Image (cartoon, rainbow, N blue to C red; front, side, top):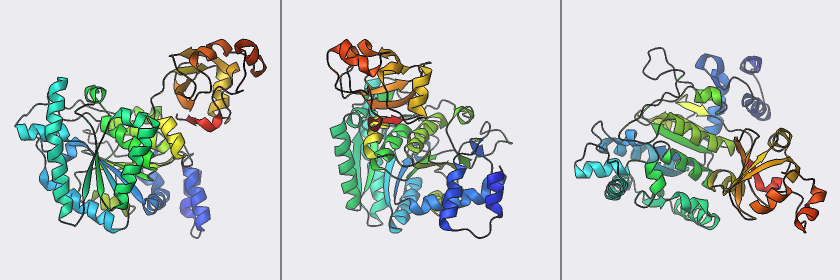
Length: 419
């Protein structure tokens, strides 16, 4: 903790020096800090992040938008509308990823229990989606703002052309001054509805990367990540997390809930997607009045998860965090280290196994010897060819295949380390 103490004791420093010290904080361990041990440094970091957040993605969870009986809390949506308008008045752009369609549909139907079968889930979501967007529209229309409904599926963001089309549409809406209200298209999304946790949290992470937004705010019914069970009297919110690793994930104490699908685990996974791409995430309570204003004032609100390195290009964000891999390539230890930490391309010599069937140009997962994913990339060879050249030196490729178009199975320029 010497670096933090030295920074706190510094009275005069240039902006360049401050930025260097703040960058140093990202490499300090442990992965999380408590209020007394990081306050001065993290206050500056929060202010830096808030100042640079020209575009903000805000994910609003079901339990923020609904009352205990599952019905929409219209007063809270009105209050959120005021806070969103204040952000827009500051010159920033806002995108909202909103849960709550199923809850809103249950409200209109007078149901108290979430259906479990797919047809009823899709029907209830269809009924509730219009009610949800109408509520947002009313809350912002009084301030002279417009909302726009955007429904996406995982397949929309998996294919590069539709991914870019979604990006262009949302950016155009922002240029027009509208507030996009994004949700999964639950009426046709089968896998998403059946997933227990994390759908809209992950969607929010992908949308943040899609737009290269500097800040994702995840609003839930809890104030942030706790250092113990949230209900325990001695548990405290952790203000700063510098990496979503095993130590942090072990702090998750989620409980299944009949109204919503997300939890702290899914929020940390979304945070991992966003911070790996070079952006920042804040997890906070959407039930607290003025929460958005406090965050953008640089106040210590919720849990801040800071970016891991430099911002990643839009193309690499699609490769690493949106496209679904068609297969996997497993590497030996030496090759894993060369790719993961050495910044090297993937050569056939380090490959020990290939799973799945894929073609040249497909996105593949890159795994270590234990089978853990740590990178993704666009392959230069199909799966059948890679099986024939795995373990070989580059000069042996022609002998094995009869042609030698590339030395690299996956070139570094087409690869993203994700973990």
